[in-house]
Length: 195
Image (tube, rainbow, N blue to C red; front, side):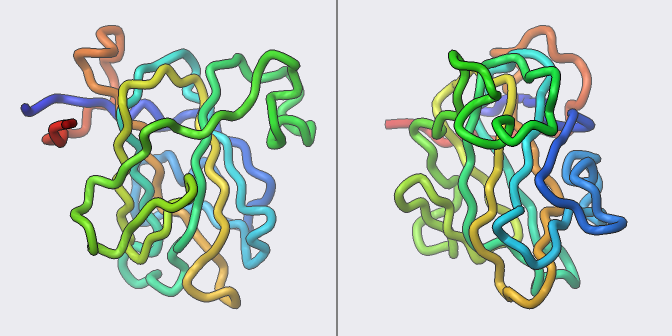
């Protein structure tokens, strides 16, 4: 069944633990594959939060890394979380990146039912809620999920001596589940049948 969708992460608010000069986290949601967010070589600081602004029903996330001539900077292992809570006033507080937003009733949760869209053996797998990939495009799907913010934590890159980078992250919101979303349509996708 063919469905239209929107990338609700496009130009969203982004916060990160680290940014390299000329590669701010905002470049991971600018819609351009030629730009990127980089945290340098310190993978311990490779965390970014994308605040979608309001609640959206998502069914997938796409992560692009090491596009074109930057293959040596590709992410090879990462984890994704989501939250439905409003962000705190102080986004520089360490609790913002930790277990919750710094509020007792909000926490980062693992995305349930996370799967890859690529066929088995296509250089991508999910083990213990961690995405293992050797692809510049990691397309992930899950059952419809209400989300206000996403967090990505990068655990490894192709070359530990080269600065890691994330070209783009897209939050896939099917139009039929998000009738108020009018901006950001960038295509359509054939969603796999769930059995």
